[in-house]
Length: 205
Length: 205
Image 1 (tube, rainbow over the protein chains, first blue to last red):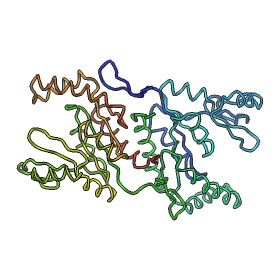
Image 2 (image 1 turned 90 degrees about the vertical axis):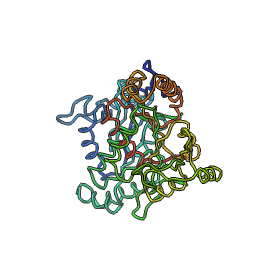
Image 3 (image 1 turned 180 degrees about the vertical axis):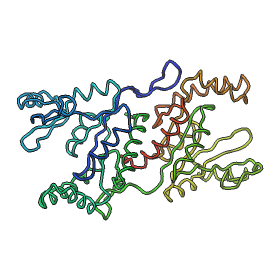
Image 4 (image 1 turned 120 degrees about the horizontal axis):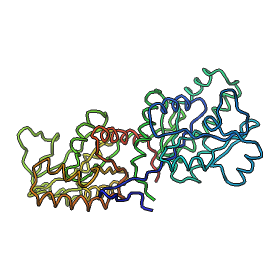
């Protein structure tokens, strides 16, 4: 299908559906902070809501924070191909419901999905027009400093996270954009620019 | 060549050279106004300076407004493949010097080239990583209104320009971005977003 069509006014029109943006980056790079600020500055973009088998925490709202499902439901969803990607963290399962993403895109909303590299590459294989953005620290030394500053991880866990970061960087060439989170404000504005630019991008088959 | 490389700090680095942006759009759409405003808001981007066989007008500066060359020099340049594209307007030749564009890109500057569709497609064939942006009016009716408002063209010339605009729109699918100049401010900010986004884009071979 030709992605640019002529409208009745004689000019070209771009697809009206929303785009799917996948944001990855090593633990500690600042994905949550950057995305939280981004959402205050763009309209027409929503965060993808995951399904999970864990119980709601106080204040968490079904459909806003998560879709809370039973392990049996989740397993059935996996078998039926209802997740774009899923992963187990500790004893719980987390996954991205394929239908919900498609519905929001059909309504013209850009969907932003924050997942790790392996999941991102899986999403790209299932949704070829997904746009993959990698958020990286200015250096691995700086990443190590930020992980220590969070003071939530043991030394062993920090070493593990750094090793994972090195592995993830090897997948970079499969991404569409590389954004360095050196200055928070610059990183947020760069992500915003990517959203705006992609909305007027003509896709080539 | 892999466009993303690992730096000594362990993270990915993007190419340091500048990008080549080609902006086209029908006569009367507002390319000059949009670009003039864009240049006041971005750093690291320069307008490509054309070579021409016409004489300098009062106030025009060699190398800033144009490279002024003799018809013989220009013809020699064509034969030697020294132009990315060239065209004759009236009795004069105008062309984009390939070397100058390459030099500026090597210095890390984004080069912005404003040319019509045929030239843009030629540039794309010679410089495959050129980024093509089409600036369109909200409708052909609005384009006609703007052309009349300029009051510089005869009725026959306006009809001709509208016919050319229709033909050019057919080449849209070969472009990378489609920007509608409905509101000037929005168009300028969208172009700026495209520049910022493309600077962190990972090129896929």
